[in-house]
Length: 389
Ligand code: AMP
Image (cartoon, rainbow, N blue to C red; front, side, top):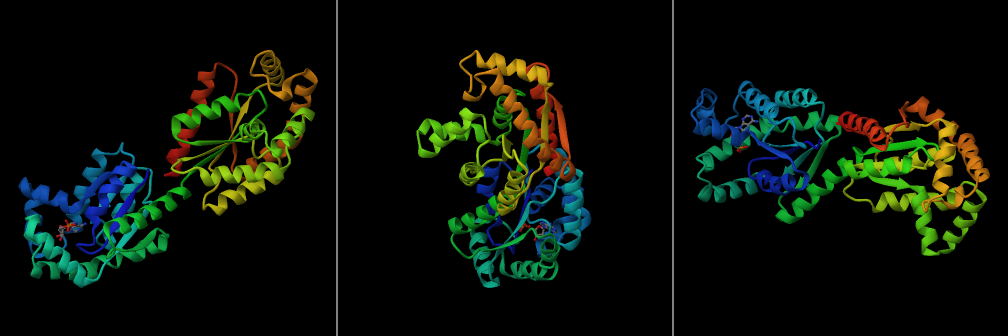
């Protein structure tokens, strides 16, 4: 889930900035002010209780806010994420929000602090008052709202600073400039929440086709060294020629060739929910390189999965493939197939061991139909997204 809170004094542009965020990230918008005004219009007991406080520009009690929020979030728990406008406004409400997010197995992605001076705030609200029809958009009430903001709401920032999810934006700039800054912050925070899966399995275990299908279903990007290398061969580049020689001798590619290709791929993949690494890392050295590449982007490996298929079945599948047009240069003879399986065993087993110690490796039974294996893998990915919050 993506959960964003827009923070700032009245008139900072929270409502305005909400529009593009809702659209871009498919968020469910919650403005406590709007919810209270609705309660008031419907003359509900909560609305009637809040009426005089709103009229004077004071803050409605946390007691009322928690009831409205719990109900609204509870009724909309299946959404992609929430956008909070005007909440949390007190330190207690920050705790309330945290509890509500935990209940949804998620957390606040970021709190964006739209900063404007008191004078800009008053000017904007007086202008808005001419058309908004809001009785609290008049100077005396505005001044009180600003007083409440600096006394009760500003201290909330400390809560989020301590959590490292508080970001400031100069909101006196143009709407477009503010939107751009807001979007950059959200993108950066989201990149930390990428779901990065390392998919292991022997040649012939179905890693490639399963990885592709998972990526398509869940908006992930596959990082498949095999495909990247084949693309280079197809281009007929100098690197491509070198790769071809390696392939024909059944050896693993050198890191000098593979790593820059991976880095390029990570850099050029925008708007993805995560990556599926297949065929990389294949050695211990590569596993350290991958850790570094991900760390550079503020993210890390979320899950390591190994598709298990018995050796005889692997040989059978690869031999069968060699008789079709899907035949790879490295499975043209049984000797090459066996050499490749042995090489995989020698180099990759220590990597799986390392991951087993660090993250734990989830073993998935690779026998059965494509759909059966796909279902097992999908359950893992969904669990990964849930835990990623
Ligand atoms: P807004 O539409 O966000 O400017 O809110 C209008 C009024 O509703 C405020 O001046 C408060 O009286 C009340 N209000 C809105 N959100 C909250 C909140 N989270 N906590 C307390 N009072 C709120």
